[in-house]
Structure formats: C-alpha cells, structure tokens
Figure 1 (tube, rainbow, N blue to C red):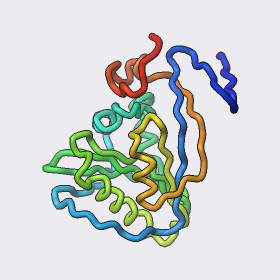
Figure 2: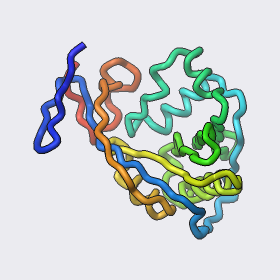
Figure 3: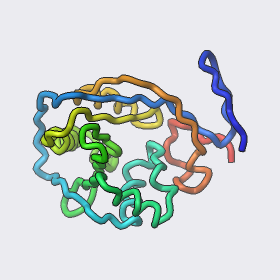
Length: 203
C-alpha cells in the first residue's frame, strides 16, 4: 500500500484516480431560533428497516452530483448493519407518495448527535424544501432533553451553498480536515458524467 505525504504549506500532487476535499465540521450547542417555512406538499417518514437496494437508489439520486459514495461501497449485509445500528435513525422526505429526500441522524451518543446525511433530489432544491427539512431535523434533535451538541460535516465536493446553509441554520464551523479517497466514478460506484465540478482524472 502506497502512502501519500501531504504538505501543510503549499501544494500536494495527487495520483491519478484520487480525489481530495476540504472537510468543514460545524456544531451547535443549543436550539436556534426557528425559521418558519411552509411546505404542505412534504412529509417526513421514519424508515425503521430500510432495504439496502432502496436506500442506495435514493442515496445515489440525491448524492451522485456531490460524489456521495460512503454508503455505496458496502455489501448488502454491511450496509444493512450500518443502517440498523443502535442509535441510527433514518427518515425519508415524501412527496406524492415518493421518497425525495433523506435525513439520517446518529443518536449513538444521545448527548452528542451527528447529522450523518441530509439531502434532497435535484428537482426539489430551492423553494424552501431544505429549510423545511432542517426544521424537522432540529425538532427531532432538540426535543430530546439529552441533547447537548448537534454536529455535521460537509466538504468541497458538496454544494457550494452547503456551509452557508448550515451556518444560517445555527451551526458554527469549528474544524477543517483533508479527505483523500479513490474517485468513485473510476470504480463504477457512480457514473463518469456526474460532479463535473470535480474533474475526472485517471482511469
């Protein structure tokens, strides 16, 4: 296994087939003031025993453009174990009977809750759907008296609006990291033509 030495001052060349993102971690320690938005066409439904194939289909539909791949690498058995682990709660946004969004919360530590996944299908972006979904997340997390901290991380492969959205929702940035991974388009996890803002190099 080859290793890569990352320069903390200046540029680091990546081998072909690798991608790198700057990850921003954000947190809040109390419930923010509500920002009301009406979306009567949407509802939130908890999924207690998600089927891996159905979960992957929604995951890809939401996240392909942002190179979401973390849940695509696991086998059916491995993914099922992740999704059903104690404290993990999965919700789908439903519109006209169809799942169009994903909210995943990790309550493994009831005092320190992670927003694991948060997203909507591309055609639902805008119009307040994201704000509506965040309101649902904040209610689920802060209605529990054990909660002391709610945190999330996002990266530069995600929407350019993600950090601003989380900050406007009451999160504060507190840490950065560099994530280097194999490009999921080269392994076939995602199509080659997604995420043009991260050019495909190699293969």
